[in-house]
Image (cartoon, rainbow, N blue to C red; front, side, top):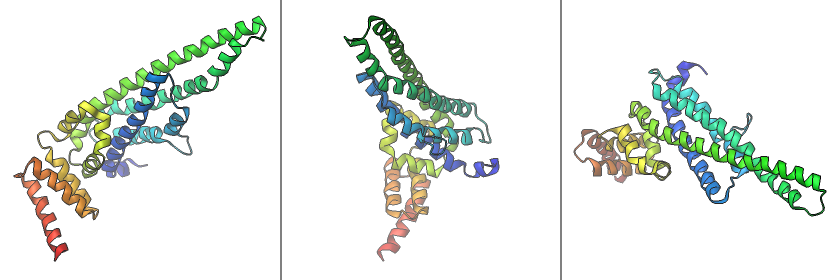
Length: 257
């Protein structure tokens, strides 16, 4: 891909990175909660998140798109390079977690059975017990890997508002934030207000105005009308809000005539 093409598509790539980060965070967090409760993660879920060279999963696509975005940003902000590294780190650490999950899921029960069998020679039981200790260490490795991924996810959540401030005019990003609000709130939790403040400063209505513009340009007029209505609730005297409302009102008048 040429840098010129990537920079021309940067608004889409920025939107995709943020969306995929949120989706991956939700899936990983669900697996980590399962590990906290049961000591297990789903090998199948992690495998699907990673995918393969011929069929890339969500984390693989996140890593690749992050490279496109953060290595081709004309301003080259430092927080972008941190995010690029962080999202790549999550991908590679999840590969290690996948392998450990495979060992724990597929081999630990068998070794436990061999260790506890009464008909095995003592020497074989001793070896089985020693090998089982290695698998026990695998669980500790999983705990460390999950801890590192959780830490990097948290740091990415802190860095994203800083980086995305330079993309506050991105209509596709605003549309995603509006359309997938439950997803974003679920991922950012208590940090959600800081996310919006980091991107839009003291103009939270701008998110809805930009989302309305994107929806309107795509022909989703009723959804655009709903978005501008929320912008009006936040700041009914803002010029940008009133301009967008006028366009929507003119469409509504023509539609009803």
